[in-house]
Amino acid sequence: MRNIKYLFAGLLFGIVLVKSEVISWFRVQEMFRLQSFHMYGIIGSAIAVGMISVLIIKRFKIKTLSGEPIVIPDKKFNWGNVYGGLIFGLGWAITGACPGPLFAQIGSGFLVTSVTLLSAILGTWVYGLVREKLPQ
Image: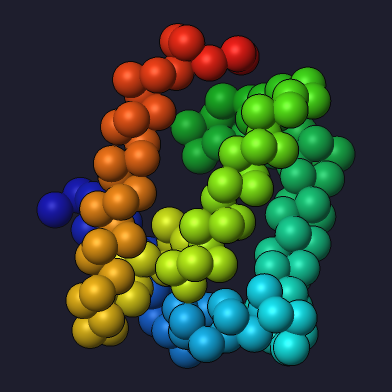
């Protein structure tokens, strides 16, 4: 029962995804066909909020609720991120879903999205198998 706040946060997030039409396959296709600004506006505003949040955390040395310092390590460029991003984007364009909205799509009754969810789980499992053999 003490984790019920996470259930409510997830439900709220799902409602926001549905109401903002982020889970709409048609909106995703419009984005990849460069026909609409809707999704770019949502993604761009999320990036802006994230950047401002990190800036505030670093500038004011904000701590976690338990009083621990928040440490944001520097990231080193890795071509694997580029390749992974291209594969992710291709899958997003083909299926019309990325991992966040998958559950909201299934919850909204688009049960065919279950195939995408199972494919994502399978892809993660295969990556776990071959990860040690990939250049890191």
